[in-house]
Length: 150
Image (cartoon, rainbow, N blue to C red; front, side, top):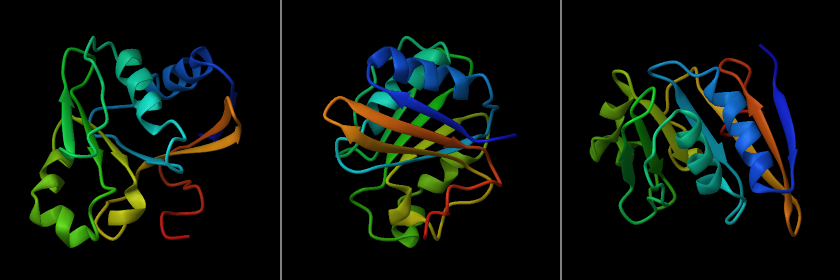
């Protein structure tokens, strides 16, 4: 499987990238979302949850750490590791348990807990290219996107 790169300047473009990924996800998938503040990680998550068929209202889990969304092809667990300082802190909070089972797990700011995240994982990297545009690079498991620690 090859990487996919989307040049996005609208919500429709984000939806297209999310549908591409949703068509390839299986139960138990881990998706790591990287990008600067405001790059569109939660917006991409909203589009991906919808592409998986859930009518859930998606919001950032920055302060709660985890949101769960049902009603789609797979249950989706949306995590935000921004406020965590290590994988040990993530494991101590019991968040690793979400990786077991049929969930699709989305992790924003995976770099914060890279030492605790298992492979293989999908990598979604969002990079702003202008005021209203961004690049979304999606790398399949075992291909990486330079790795979480690079």
